[in-house]
Length: 164
Image 1: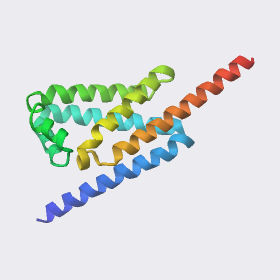
Image 2: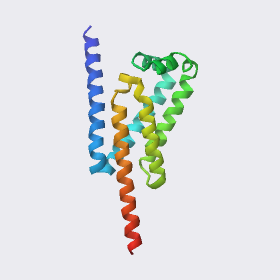
Image 3: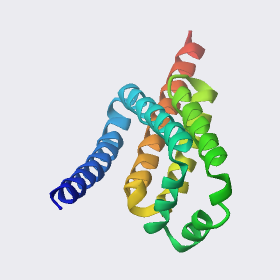
């Protein structure tokens, strides 16, 4: 029974840490976007690795996500998702890896990867506690701030080049 209490405490610690990190990224996304990009790179890289590993090692564990998901997601997870768990999650992991790599780029590649990250975060928010809700929405906001900061920096450098 004590191990269940520990797991429950560890889950809450993970939940609070994820949400705290997302709030931190919202703040740092405007003040230090390059640092935020590194953290976003690490988050998406870690998520890609974990998802790929679990998809290959224990794909059935993704059915647990239905426990806290919105009804339409729950229906999908327990229905159509079951026979395609491994290829679907490996595709998601590949996309997370591409988003992570985009965080290391500039210009259109970064912008596209950033918007893909926002869409991904919004798409997983209905998973509820299994996605550490509201963390995905906070993370989407943080990515948006970094995209805006990058766009402002690009406009400034273009303007400076035009002045020369």
